[in-house]
Amino acid sequence: MNVAECKVTIVGLGLIGGSIALGLVGKVGEVRGVDLSDEILASAKKRQMADVLSTSPEETLPHSDVVIVALYPKMAERFIKEHLELFTPGTIVMDVSSIKSQIVNRVQDMMPDGVEFLGTHPMAGREGRGIDKAREEMFLGSYYLLTPTEKNSERALEMVSNLVELLGVRKIVNLTPAEHDALVSYTSQMPHVLASLLMNGFTEPSKFLIGGSFKDATRVATINEDLWTELFLENKEHLLHEMDEFETRWSALKEAVASDDDQALRRMLKQAKDLKEKI
Amino acid sequence: MNVAECKVTIVGLGLIGGSIALGLVGKVGEVRGVDLSDEILASAKKRQMADVLSTSPEETLPHSDVVIVALYPKMAERFIKEHLELFTPGTIVMDVSSIKSQIVNRVQDMMPDGVEFLGTHPMAGREGRGIDKAREEMFLGSYYLLTPTEKNSERALEMVSNLVELLGVRKIVNLTPAEHDALVSYTSQMPHVLASLLMNGFTEPSKFLIGGSFKDATRVATINEDLWTELFLENKEHLLHEMDEFETRWSALKEAVASDDDQALRRMLKQAKDLKEKI
Image 1 (cartoon, chains in turn cyan, yellow):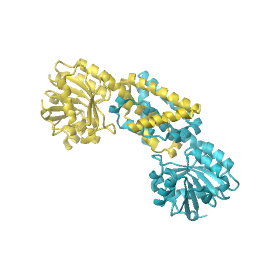
Image 2 (cartoon, chains in turn blue, green):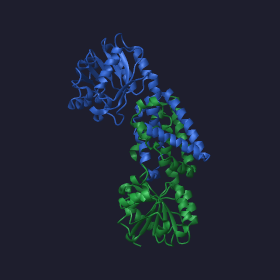
Image 3 (cartoon, rainbow over the protein chains, first blue to last red):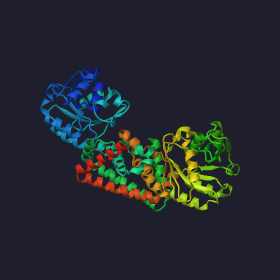
């Protein structure tokens, strides 16, 4: 099937769902936008985000080629579970959440015959939330991750890849759900842990000494606490492993400072500099 | 004495010294720039950073009203120690390094009669290094910290404050050297520790999952390892204390994750968000 004829339904017109809608509308056969909020649908209409806008899954899910569920992880799973009978055989269902193993596993197990679930994770758009921050160029030049399993078909992978390319991504990368979650605990969850814990040490007089390094280190402390609590707990095994790894490096640095081991300290800092310059 | 008649000698025309020179030249009686490198002096001449440029402390230090030693902490201390006989009574000597207690203590103890040392720390300009990155607006709108002790006179504090105001700073803040070092270990040294340790966990496949949060969290991993090794060790008592404090918060978060305590986790993340939004 040609992607230009594809009927895409997007559930949840927030930051990610709204941006995907903006990126696909006019380039595929039809974009249907579903959201429970009339206010969000009115905003989506004003911005011409979709060909069809509706609060009703019954009206929009059936006969979709692809359904993109752009909700928080737990809500995404619940939404799919509660609307299983609305997916027509042949439909590909995908999510966009930033953890994968458990969700992919549970959702693939519940799919009706002929309906396929593929886990995906766009590496973009983590600042702000809601439809007002959605923008067409959100995914331009960024990586887009797919986490296929043995339950996914070549056809689904190809269709989703073709769709995602319309968003202007730099590269589509396939990983197993477990590989994905191990890596994301390092690249995304750890920065949020560190930023939050650093921020929580703040005292009033510190404000005079805040410079660029502190501001950068705490930027993502403007965290959506509901979403990240879910993400941390859902991925706790990998996150705890990364925290253990961090502790090993932390202890070595602390020991070098405590024992005035300037050579070891310089070596650690130089390693960090070299790695940062490499990437 | 009017600041417009003040003769200022700046030792070391790097990022900070060069920026101070650019900020003062033409606004005070005379700016003398001292550097050991002919290349740096040629660059300073081209950018008209100073009225007098020289490699010779003998030619420039005597009869200065203010000498600003803009070298790395240990070099600053050594420079002052090796040129004590060149400071004329009445001269105010100041440094710009980002740790204070030990340096202020040791340098004030060695000052000849009638020569006064005042510790200072401009809260700006930590990106890049060297004269090429120096710019006149470096200190515009930033805090400038002074760490006077009972050995400093009102006259010196007033003179240095008047000079620093010429740089366009937002506010001059007086702290004791110990207060300063305790705060700086949190606001500046901890971000550098965290950025470096996070960076050192990098593995090749992680690169596909690097987003804005990781980039920000590791920005200062492009660290000057010689300078920061000095800074960490010189301030080790406060840094180790901050690391202990961080460990307490770290353990609480880790425990919340391990025990699926979503309420505690959400509370910690919300605290971070609220603090970040406040500052």
